[in-house]
Image (tube, rainbow, N blue to C red):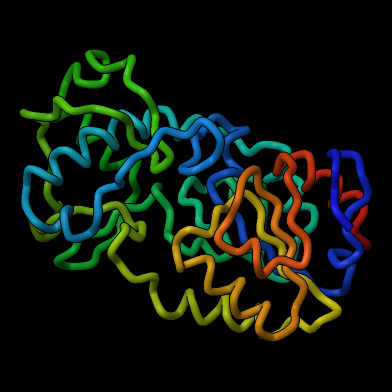
Length: 273
């Protein structure tokens, strides 16, 4: 049963007793955060983990861009889709997003698969600190930098399009002098095994009477796609809501071309509590 408009009926497979939801960057576009591969998205190559740890120039480029992007992302607010998911309170919400908007909307049973941009980790001593504290240090070490680059384009990872990063000062860990990295999973880096297992356990608990719902993800990267494969192999219905093709379309029970927020609001009213 296909959904043709935001006010159409929700597919019956989403009304079963248990529901696991996987979200991607498309869900946060209504909060002003651009996505990776949606219609109109600019092709881009995110910095890999290997690049980041490869030398100070790459880290300078990363933190200069991220410093500017953080000033915008930290003001983003949950949209109707985030709030609808909090009301739905699925058995597990798996998000590939690092923006923290699900948490801000009040979602409880949640795995932030790729971490949160609001946390910073030292690669030497593994000490975790607040991004807001690092931002104070970055601002103090680079006076006037944000004001001089206020017109650059934002990107999905919470950074911006910027080539001129020479001279940007990157502080080290205050505890040990080590390299600081946002506590998120970069391309080329593995998702922590415990997070993956928690998600697998939730998907494995589903039956053919339940469903896995994917919202706003092209499923291009394996970190999210593996859960779709797992569910489909077990005979669990998979519903994908995304504008444009996804890697999981051939495995979907239902594929819906619909806006994420509109659909989730409709589902939150239709699904039994």
